[in-house]
Length: 313
Image (cartoon, rainbow, N blue to C red; front, side):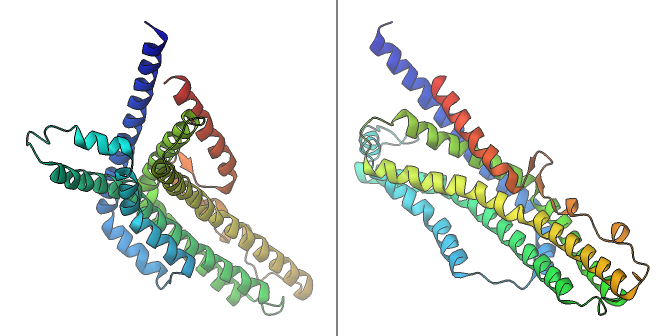
């Protein structure tokens, strides 16, 4: 086999691996939709427990970007010269012979549905997951501020029991979130992880080649949606155990102050009553744990797998 033939074979294998990973991401997105549909009642119950909540301007803008991403990515795909050439060379579409304009319409619909499935639908569920995590984190933060604002004399048994009751209620909300998003969050992680590998591998493989502007824009959008979604999950869900730990510390500190000031702790034992912060750690099927300490490891893993994908292409 000549050198040119070997290069073509390597490029063909690399392209095949990329296609398999992208199809896998779309399949994962379909499973996300199905898993969320199966948990519709639990989700409704969960939303009722954290209502009301409102979107900030940045959140509204992010949601707008998510909803418009299929259009942007479809336009970017159609602007690529190789896509136009592929459409022109298509003889039949599912056994039907179509003229050029109908082939363009068919391709637009096909691409739009694919990008609507992934990354758009994946990121819609990611957005909801992160929004709920933020809401619970804010509620924990408010509870911590309430403990902090009590004087040792005011922090009586009645106030302590109320804080414990509110914290326990939030722990129940987090456990309900785990039931709703355990499978979807795992599938989101797998789909976004695969997409990140695809885009980084493509960028590295074409690093010293002339890249069409439409391809570059498409890559930027895809890596932003995929890695941004993963980062948002780790960052927002990772805030929950941090806020729980802060509440843990403030409650304990206030109990100690009251003991020193009043000379009694009202018989309530923090270690026995306050729900541990570990109950606030969310995970995807017990496999992927959403903690901020995992962000650096995630970035390194994505880069490693991208290099392996290229080297084995």
